[in-house]
Length: 543
Ligand SMILES: Cc1ncc(C[n+]2csc(CCOP(=O)(O)OP(=O)(O)O)c2C)c(N)n1
Ligand code: SF4
Image (cartoon, rainbow, N blue to C red; front, side, top):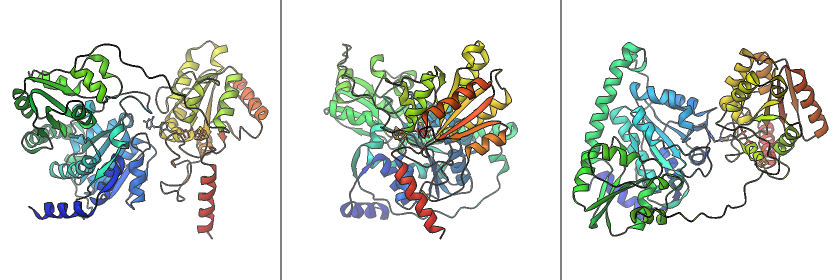
């Protein structure tokens, strides 16, 4: 037994923790001595940063995922161990640095946590970020439970340092949130101190340097593939030779329960895919079925390599898998599935300031280009006041686009509605567009400033003037930004103080046919007391 292995065994006897996958990732990040972790909140990934902060690790909220990625990449360029975490759609926002960072590589380590949401428990789409690993050429690890979330975080750091490449840790909702026993066996590590080494050809991606960098990436991936084939975190579980199952992530856990007697090839690293290992496994079983959630990512790649495996019928591509659904897949059952009766739809809290704002817009028969946040709930009865919702920040551009083409009478009724956190995340460039290409009828942008990122659990953002730990820091004042950018009509109003006054302001602003920004400022009812306590603490600190 190596020194590390005997340390692990001893620790395991001493300590077992009940952790969610997110908590396990955070604990591993801290044990590995991560120097910087950055994120923008988003279910199911949010708790990773919050937990790192609780554990005393260096974590921060960034204005959006792209910035978080770049900050973490900068730390990894400087030789440190860094982590960036986000929900699946966050990787769309961070895709630009992602794709080029695999060319540049890193000097330290960069772990990119992508928390996917099969079944869309709390998301606007069901995209499968395993596709990103292939497209960007980023090695990908897929833990199945909290223990693996802990272990694979360490492995991601190890691989990232060894091949000097960012590594993706792809987790999904059930792994993020389900609690399981974790043996935190790794010896707390002290990584080498950060230090910047000039490497102009490796880090400055002009075409002349990017071309060889792309070739270097492909060479690294070939080496990583060879490692994954020979000694990657993939294991076989011997069972009946009549049925073999290839699986990864949470789907493996369901499949083990659905077919306990089958033989399994459980994949831990799913890009680059160890196709020869899979081929060898398939040859040992009579029938081989690939069990995976969402896209046919594994099955397509395995079949493309000429390996004969069964996949799932298209009806199982949608929503999460569970033990029952895996049994149906194995039985080739195509009969209609039981559909659970819809539960009570979520609602805006009593006293929520969004309720007042959206009700007034509905009364004024506005065409509402909406955005993502608690206020999106106003789309449901009884308010039903939202006409579009696509992705974070889209309300501004969508509203402008409609204003440009609609007949004047209709265009005049278009408003864009965005929350304060979402505005900072990706609404600011929309505001710049508003000034740069103003519609003939002007435009009205409402920023619903409730002093928090309510939808994901009351996180701070640059507009609150407090950091992840709720300590005072620099504050972005949105109305000052709007004025600085050249918007003449900027109003700040508490919409709940006098609903008729707010409605009058809306009517006048819409009639003006000018560019206008209205900041509706009233704290979220759930956050108000906490905000007051943070402000009081800050006042006491300032003496
Ligand atoms: C790219 C991306 N990142 C994160 C999320 C998760 N998310 C949805 S809305 C939102 C912010 C909500 O805050 P805010 O705009 O202030 O509205 P509130 O919920 O406070 O009303 C977040 C973080 C997402 N949907 N898309
Ligand atoms: S959490 Fe806050 S913003 Fe969200 S619905 Fe409740 S009161 Fe409104």
